[in-house]
Length: 188
Image 1 (cartoon, rainbow, N blue to C red):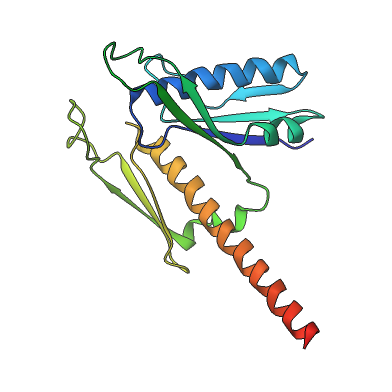
Image 2 (image 1 turned 120 degrees about the horizontal axis):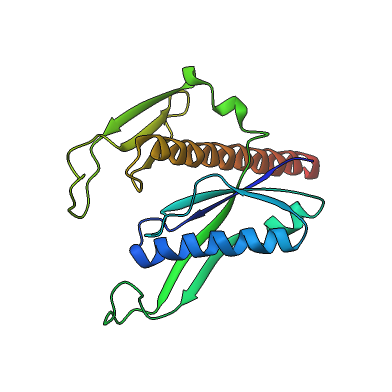
């Protein structure tokens, strides 16, 4: 049986969304285990929330389970971090990450990694460490960035996932266009 990987992310949303990602990861893990699936959190939930978490799921019904959760999740709750904040809707995205057909995009010789200083709201680590990462796929010029985490390694992994997803979408678009062209030639 193959592993299924789900990435839960809050994107650039506020701390409440990061907290929601951590809560959602715990919920999905329990739900998977209740359904007889093996489930691991590859990045442990942080009590202050995570910008992204990668889940690994395996079992007979892992495909169905993963497909059911892909999309955007909404958490309706007054802010647990800012008591008088008017916003009550917090969002997190769940996407499937595939490694089996993406290895050809992961060769070190095909991409360049640039580290830079993270920008954004203040804090003791901003402008002190080069934790933000940009990865450039040299053959296509496609880029992906990540600066959500304080760890350069986590940001590199996130940026690599995003780049692979962009490259895969590009390949799927090429295949769709190729099929359309083939269909045109058959008709005429």
